Every structure is written in structure tokens, then in C-alpha cells.
Amino acid sequence: MTYRQSSYDPLAATVQGKPLRPFNWVQWTGVALFVVGVALFLAQLAGAAGLPAFAAFRKAPGVFPMLIGQLLVYSRREELPRLDTEEQRAKNRKAIALTTLVVAAVLTAAAFISLKGA
Image: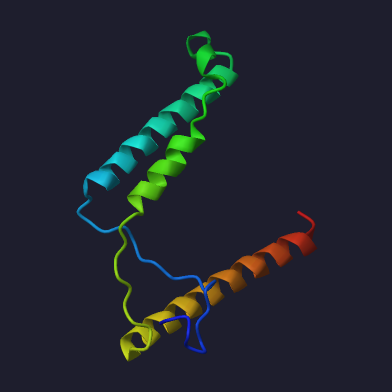
């Protein structure tokens, strides 16, 4: 779609699929960065908890490697199926019905607990 078409929306979000498998080297670099970020984050928590061996990691920015790693893992995405097929519409109807039932059950339980005074 080009910008000259009347239905062109430059701010429209595109729906993307899961990461493509098998991973390429960029995605594996992202996995490694994510693991390093998790290790730094856990070391930061251990340092904040007062463990002397991890005192140097109290200010370690563990979130940034996790974010960059996540971006690298999601750099290649699967193509999504077309939404206008009857099979996909049936899957969507099932998912919406299941979600509606779960939400209704949770809200009913929450109302029951709230009104009971527990």
C-alpha cells in the first residue's frame, strides 16, 4: 500500500507473528544478551539484598541487555495467516468465546468474593 491510496494510514500498527525458527546468529546473540541481562538483574537483586559477594552489582543495569536481546530475537518474524479465511475466522470465534467465558468466570468469582466480604 502506498501513501497515495486513500486508505493509507502511516501510523497503523502491523500485527507480527512469533520469532522465526531456526534462529540465525542475530537471534542467538539476542538470546545471549537476554541471559546476560537476567544474570545481571539477579546479581543486582542479590547485591540489594545485602549479599557481600554481589555488592558491586547493586547498580548494574540488567534491564538494558534484556531489552536489546529481546529486540534481536524478534528481528525475524513468521508470516501470519490471512484473517479472511473461514478456517481462521472459526479459530478466532473459538478464542473469543473462550476468553469471554474465562473473563465472565473471573468477574463472577470476584463479585462473589467482594459481596461475601471475605
